[in-house]
Length: 320
Image 1: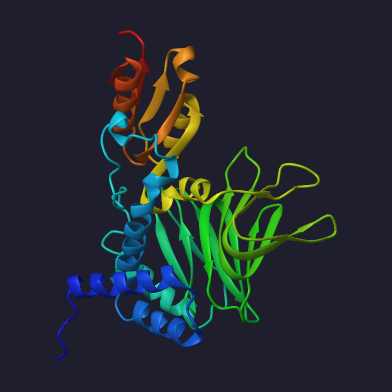
Image 2 (image 1 turned 45 degrees about the vertical axis):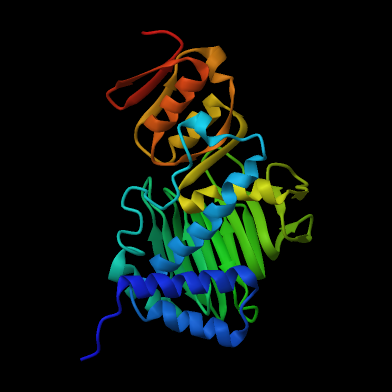
């Protein structure tokens, strides 16, 4: 009887794959090897996600510049993927792995995947391509005559397209995005325009009767009749994609905006009673599932008080 692979050896192999992915795009042989490795054990996809998060975490703090001091905001950023029920021991164990295996041999009917508030989920799409679902996100995945199609029904998802012979099309309500190779994020939240962020490679979306090409490090906000792509820097991309390692990053947003961001990831609601305090800017990297820790860090910086009242975390400039 074959000896079961240890978690330590899986983590070591995952770290090696993460390093290869970081160095350069994989060739066809390497993609096939990665796909075979991922499907060989239900624990492996989660291990690869954690390894990628650790690699990204080593670069995240640099995105805030030399003047950023994490000690001012309650200590060093908490590296890791410790969201509530996050992947539950590696990609929600065998249930997700089994569904993914069916996906990789060809999906005839759409398959639905979802995350609850505070969860993340990595779904292999075959041939090394993946979609990573952020908190409170729902997608449907299907193959259509060799082309992958994903419907983003709500939330936020990060797509990695490894196989150029099989393009990926993402439908997000009024928006449609197609890529033949690269990595991009699509955000579809209630009350907000659809937003596309291309991290690597290229993507295209219909606009003005033709395809609008989006190169690497490009953001597109579909909030106008003639959307215009905007070039963004690597630091901004790192901050915007910090959720992939269980973090929320702010760079000058108001405390009111930050409080709304935390409400996407956990049930406790941050309430700021002082209007002037709510308009104060905040910069830092915080654990997405810790609104209480964030509130206490804010209070220590601005001389405010924090009181927990039921499901509310109240920040005020005086006791109330």
